[in-house]
Length: 363
Image (cartoon, rainbow, N blue to C red):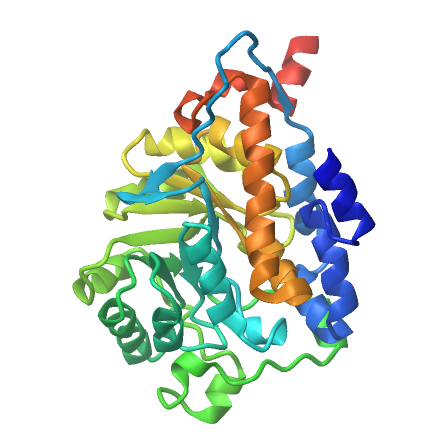
């Protein structure tokens, strides 16, 4: 309590939402809108956050929680807590050091960073910035040679998995960016691989990408492949059938198709469809340690955070990212203690109550 009071007196943010306000103050409006905005009416953008608030706890008492263990493993790699850094574009718009600062913060927090293929620092620059476990997020362009070179570069530079984004055959309509006449700088990772004109149009995404292309991707890398952008039981089953190593339940931070469901509301559907064959992760709307707990209770092995990382980076650079991760870990630890869960494996479905269950109990 004394620490919280000191932080307030010194103007230090005490939660992730306060970092968002600091980022808004620090960034040019065009860049803040780019990071914070969603598609069209932004219904899903709001729902990603609000849906977590409709889930309540069923805490268990008189459990020994004198020692809390947050650690878990992802694809065999041990991390300090089930909180990873999601891929997000163009970190240099938030801070001059860009993704290298984010990578150092992830390494210091002993967690995994997923580098976006739309990063403003190259695969090589991020790899050399610190020693940590990193995954690489991939978009597939019409020129498949670009994807091949990106994947091979990631593998050569020690990245441990490929996270294939599958919900972007074309980019969603983000109206704030249209109003602001937002133009992204050229993508460092594909400079020289495509024409300048294509680069300035965020590449030419391959709208023909389909399930059989997972086999093509597996043929060009030895790395495990995770699919990011699954929201339904049907696609979760197909993903396991084509042999992916994991699934990220994601609606692209509500930046693609508006009026898709919030990720936390479809997590259980995907988890049940997978049936334990592969790990399931979640991104979208995580702003509190309580949100992390709720996702784990509904079957996620870990969560990925995107906007909170960018807000921390914009507000306070590498320190800000470290602080955001630390805040969420502290909140998760407290939630686990107050819910009677000494370790993440003790978090079960019985620890939460969803909105559907509340309604059903009133019938």
